[in-house]
Image 1 (cartoon, rainbow, N blue to C red):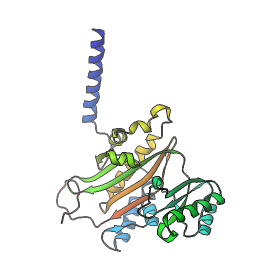
Image 2 (cartoon, one colour):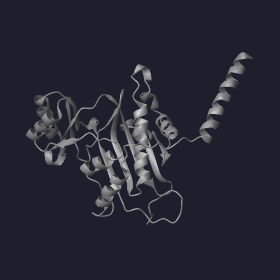
Image 3 (cartoon, rainbow, N blue to C red):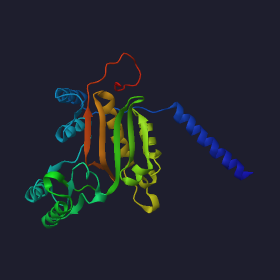
Image 4 (cartoon, rainbow, N blue to C red):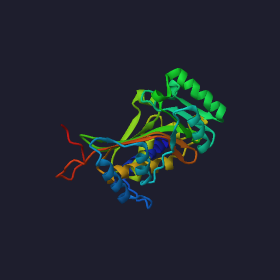
Length: 279
């Protein structure tokens, strides 16, 4: 009888929590450091260059910075000497990465070399990359300061023709991609929805200390999700954002790469979700 009573109480608590979350979706937070007007001015200038614009790396970093999102700079390394100069400017240890489309974010293919502690290791890694994959002009190598160890994640926002703006989250890597282990929420995302988004993927235990590993800074991750949501919600011209990878460490996180795509906002005469026109 006591066991049944405990089970019934647990179910009642779960039901009460579900009712509370259903009726209290949470709030979309405000951030004092967001420069919405500056971002709008930058977007307008970029769109003058043409429709369907893929924003360049420098402008991407500037636009994200207007929303308090810092992308770690990556310096081009067209030659071994340029790589050494970049590493000296950034400070060791560094990572050497090939940014050619077929190798981008593919550490499993050998296009990323991490924890290079000095110039000798950097030059050796550079030579290995070019021997494996071809000349540097095809690889487009860059040098980047190392981030703190953590869990690699991916944050995306896109315009779905049916649903409108959608924010997505998952872990980086082939396993998550093959499993389709990605969670989604409609923009604008509330604080409660950001928390739920992080916990909705099947691989979420890896963020919370699975099998004795160190839990990572999920509050920082949730704030990043909320800031991306605000960017997309504030500016209908932003039709795609990808932050990959986002390395979430025990304290803080690092955005190592980002891409943004812009398009003129569609004309709208309703109050529903914003969508791209379908041709």
